[in-house]
Amino acid sequence: MRLSIAATNKQSDEIAQSVPIQISRVDRGQTSEVLDHVALEEPLEIRLDWLDGVERQRKSVSITMRTPGNDNELAAGFLFSEGVVRLPTDIDDIVGCGSNNGAHGGQNIVKVRLADHAKVEWPKLQRHFYATSSCGVCGKASLDALEVPGICAIADDGFQIDSNLICTLQDKLRARQSVFDQTGGLHAAALFNAAGELLALREDVGRHNAVDKLLGAQFLAGRTPLSNQLLFLSGRASFELVQKALVAGVPMIVAVGAPSSLAVELAKRFNISLVGFARGERFNMYHGAARISDID
Image (cartoon, rainbow, N blue to C red; front, side):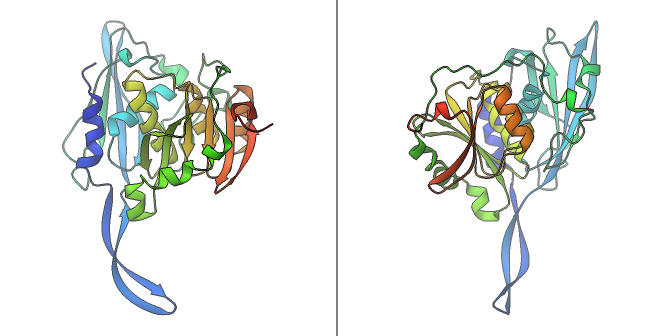
C-alpha cells in the first residue's frame, strides 16, 4: 500500500478545522460583538475502486458530513468497520481526487483503490451509503444488516484497568482537545492502554467519524486488533460505535454519556466491557465488570 500514515496525520495540521465568525454575545442583558470559532463541517465522498472479474469497478459508497482532516484514515476506518476490508494489504492506495473543492482549501472526495485480491460483494452491503454527522447507520437497509459478518466475541485475554484510572481519562482527553477548546463543537474518540496512558486521539463533528479516523489510523498501521486498549468516547455510546469497536477488537468502551439499549445488547452479546456516564469519580458499569481490576 502506497499510503503513509504520516501523510494522513499531516492532513489535520494543514487543513482548517474551525472557522472564525463574528457573533453577538449576550451576558446578563449586555450585548457585545466578539469573534468566535465554530467547528468546520463539510461533506466527504468516499469512492471505491476494485477489481470485479477482469474489469475494475468504481462506485461512490458514502457521503458523510465531517470535519476536514485525516480523511484517509476516515475512509479506511469506515471500510474496515463495515467489513469491506479486513487487512491493510486489501488497500492499494487512498488519494484525494478532483480539485480543491472544499470551502477552505481541502479536498472533499477520497478515492480508495483496493488491491486486486480484495473482493467486494456489493449486493451484500445492503446499504444506501449516506450518513449525517450525527448518525452513521441511517441508511442501513435492515437491522439484520447492521452486524458485520464474521465477527467473534472479544476474548477474556487479561486486559484490566483500575477504576481510579477510568476516572482520570476524561481530563486527559480534554487536555489534548485543541479544536474543541476553540469551538466546543467536536466529538472526540481516544485510545488508552491499561495504565491509563493516552495513545491516540481524533476529533470530528460526527461521533462515528471521530471513531473511524481513530480506528482507521490503527488499521492502516497494522495495529489491529486492539486487544490491549480501551476506546474512550466524549459523548454517548451508540450501537454503531460499539460495533466499530468490536470490529477493531477493542475489549472495553468508556463513554462520558449514556449507552443505548442496542449498544448494551451488543456489548453483552460480544463480551465488550461497557462503561457509561464516566464523569468525575463516578461511572456506570453496563457489562463486563471483570475487566475492572479493583471492583467486585
